[in-house]
Image (tube, rainbow, N blue to C red):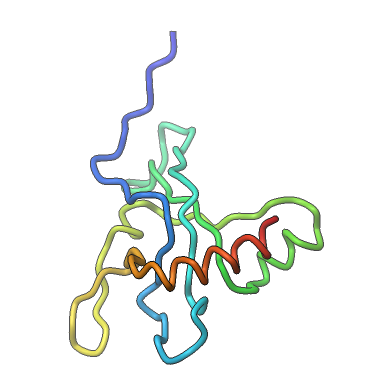
Length: 119
C-alpha cells in the first residue's frame, strides 16, 4: 500500500504571474509565466524545502521555449514551491517573488501570446 504524498500548505492558483524582475515599461510578456501545476519529489531523501515544486512555463521566447518548439518535446520550468511563494528585496522593499496578474486587459494579451506559443 502506498502512502499518499503530503500536500503543501500553500499553493498558488493556476494562472498568469509576473516575476519581480518584470519591467512594466517593457513588453507585456517580459518575465511573464503561466502556472501549470505542482510537482512532487518522488524520493523520500530530497533536500529540505524541495519536496514540492511549482511547474510553470515562460510566455516569452526563452531557450527552453525554443527547445520545446524545435525539439518537439514540451519543456517546463520548475522551482521549489517555497521559493516561488517567497519574497525578495527589490529597490529597498520586500516584494513577492511572483505576483498574480489580475488586470483583465493584460490577461487577454498574455493569453493570446500563450495560445500562439503553445498551440
